[in-house]
Image 1: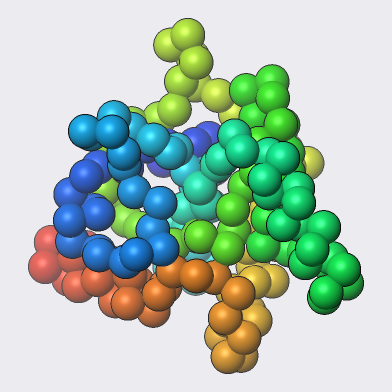
Image 2: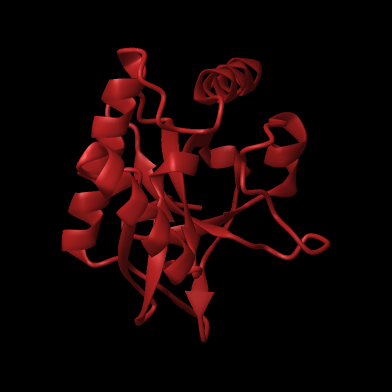
Length: 162
């Protein structure tokens, strides 16, 4: 399967079996594929993709965004944007790296892949990169242990000769 930025994907259960992190938003309801994740290719390692969970619980996250804005002056860890014709919350705070082996399928509505508008893609990419840069300077705004997940993905690539 070709992975393209601009689309969201569902992830194989195998990934969640290998990477056990209490902050990962894993598949739920007996292998039903929820949630789906927006994919952004890593700038340095083209084999890695950063997955941003997409939530329909917009009102819940709007409240959290407002609290963060009052406390910190901004919020770059949760972005509200249109997806499949509805507002959704893109949870950069729960992002994690993954390799193509663990992608299951592209997210569709009525059998058609759903894309993210170019402007929203730009905003998500910029905010993810900013949050990752802060992470690399010791400011951890992402709940997931991304160093552990990244190491597991690098080990998978090494084991599979990637």
